[in-house]
Amino acid sequence: MKDKKNKRFPGILIAVEGLDGSGKSTQLYLVKRWLELSGHHVYLTEWNSSEMVRQAIRRGKKKNLLTPTTFSLVHAVDFADRYNRQIQPLLETGYIALADRYIFTAFARDGVRGCSSTWLRNLYSFAMVPDITFYFKLPSVIAIERILSNRPKIKYYEAGMDLKLHPEVYDSFRLYQTKIGAEYDRMSKEFNFIEIDATLPIEVQQETIRNLIAGRINLARYKNGAGNE
Image 1 (tube, rainbow, N blue to C red):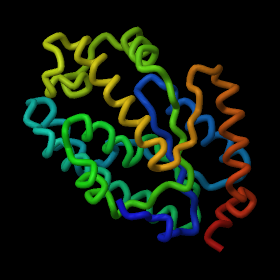
Image 2 (tube, one colour):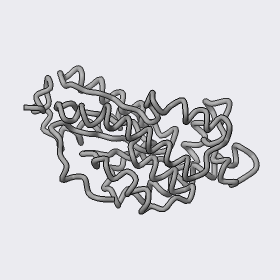
Image 3 (spheres, helix red, strand yellow):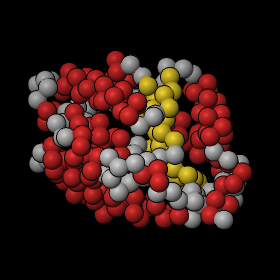
Image 4 (spheres, helix red, strand yellow):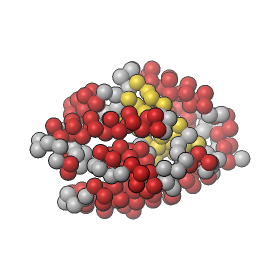
């Protein structure tokens, strides 16, 4: 993947990644509220949120029609639409954009499905590398139990059933999540993720994250949309 660090925008992009159940969404919401209350212009964007593509993805998943390549391509289209319509325009106007999952989610999930890492990085080469990427690191066994204790049903692709890892959905889910965790661990060094111990109390994680953001970004510059000046 080409280094997009040289393609800067006035705004700031902060992404969070990690296994389902790692608490990343909770932490990003708390960051959003903190920045908003401090007078910053903030926008939160989520994975699979493009209205244009969402229905096509939903239909393909419902009928189990997606091969690893088509699975990867439809999610890339979803992300490209979201990136071009939401993320980049906001960065161009000086917003702080918070991404609940970013291109690294595709790298992990599609990589486990057998897609080439080189192909994936080229596929998403239009997207800039975030200014900060937090990786909420959590042992897969803990993340899995958190999900299974709060969710009565695991969906087909969510469990990695298309990979034929195991005929039983919950065992397949465990194996799939473990493989995704290993992909994140490999990417952490490649993309200089900031690793957060997701086993720590929520307030401890949040304090660490806020200190890291304040230490790496001149937040005063982005107050009240000043980042576009």
